[in-house]
Image (cartoon, rainbow, N blue to C red; front, side, top):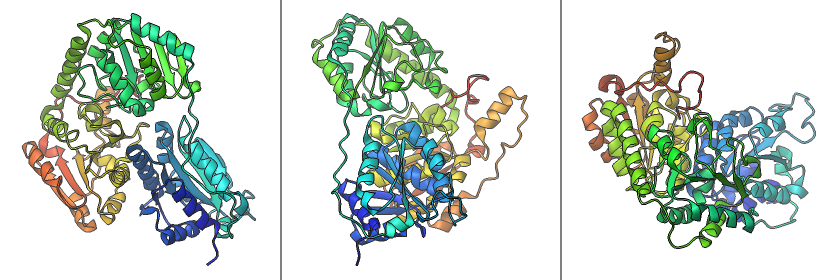
Length: 549
């Protein structure tokens, strides 16, 4: 059989370390998928839609640390993935989107070829870190290598690669062998590190704000916490330092107690975080000074806050170099760690009081999720915005997966990707509105027999929208009531186990019974029977959009 570019791409991906691919088969990507099946080195997970495939590849990459690959067809199919790819771009996920193109003879010429979208590259550029195209057989290995390198080079992010269908079918031309990409990482200057070390030595109440870009620096950040430096994280930076560490405020980064701590701190170092508006009151929350930032992306220097210093470098390497210039003990205020613990406890207590009956759910998941090393996947829902993003702890930074961009309906597919990446059972927190956007991917979970427990909070409405309408629109509840499926019948129709909880006290037992199940299980909490939260969650105050997540 003649070796084609499709075979060359399949072999090149495997040689570069790719183990798993998610996608939807089509006439335009069959040459690649036929080769993937023939070589048997890459697991292909068939999604029910391209958006789901992209979310799966994104979550798989976050949990596994590998490059996630999503394969789509051209035109509309590539467009279907765009929203999910925007999420990967927001998160800086290491995802390669391999999409296709019509035959090169008619490509980019607006000649009405089927599946042709003349402005497909422009669309892809809007949701990609970079866009590449394989123009002919000779360029296939080199272009694939360049795309893979772009995926992992800081600042990482999703990269799109177009492969015209006639090029996929063309006979391959051996030019180069692929290996796992090895990106160059920026190195902070010795002078800047020495200056920052001096600031740390002089500080009495220093703090680290850890974002998603610090997740590879757990060892170094924890060593700084052990010296007494206070820790606070974004939701994406959670567990970079263990969330049980006595110096950690966790992701309770915007509570009154956190703000009081910031007011008393005399140094803050922001590592791998953009200080996003939804975690800083749209950048109006006062942070300690002097304020320093460490980031691999120089364009982020001082973008949201004025800085006293910026170090462009890899988080782990920079913190390691900083540690090397610090003594074995620092002159930290002896009351500082106690005050952090009190602020954490008060923040947690205030949150629990707002949950009402759902304290039982939050407390039980708090006991199970970190202890079992479970991936903790959350869709955008009231339960995530209250307790899911900060109260339920995780065992390691890569085990927390949520939609940073705030788009609902990505949780089911993300849970699939996380479950493919992890040996431990994945726990996914969903709302009924978001679940209906990604409901087809429940079938993917069944087909792959994945160990997932879906916890579905069903209030038969867009609950947060109704609360905002009550608070800001005099209770005029337009367009927020939902007709929801009978989830028990839905699960039965696709062969998924289903459990309904109508009395909240039954949740721990019902949930625990799913942990040893074979395959996915959906646990549905009937919130109309159980009742509301103790305090209605109405999202951000008017004029401060973005604070709810």
